[in-house]
Length: 125
Image 1 (cartoon, helix red, strand yellow):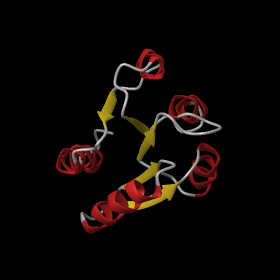
Image 2: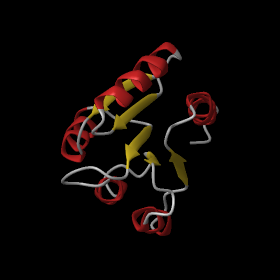
Image 3: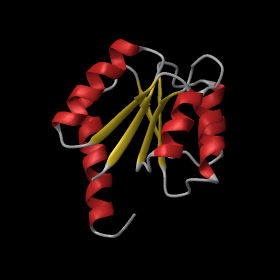
Image 4: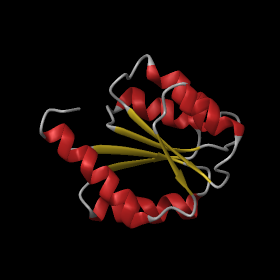
C-alpha cells in the first residue's frame, strides 16, 4: 500500500483531499498540526508527507526538518497559498523538490502521487 499523510490546519480542505485520495486507492492519514503529524509518522510508515507551509506552532518546513533524518525515504510536498514565501525558499534550499500552490489542483495531485506510487512499485523509490 502507498501511504500519504496530509497535514493542514484547514479541516475542510484536508477532508476533501482525504476522500479523493482514499477513493484513488491511497492509504491516507490526516493531521491538523506538525506535532500530530510527527506522532502519526512514528506509528505508521509513510511514503508521502503532504504538508501546508503556514500552520500554528510548527510550519511545514520545520516539520520537514524534523522528519528528514528519521525518515529519509519520506517524500515531502509543500502546499501553500503564498508561492513566493520565504519559508518556501528555505524548504527548497534544504531539499524539498515539490511545492503545490493552493487551491490544489486535485487531478494534478492524484497524477503526481500515482507517479510516485508507480516508482515505488518498480523499486525506484
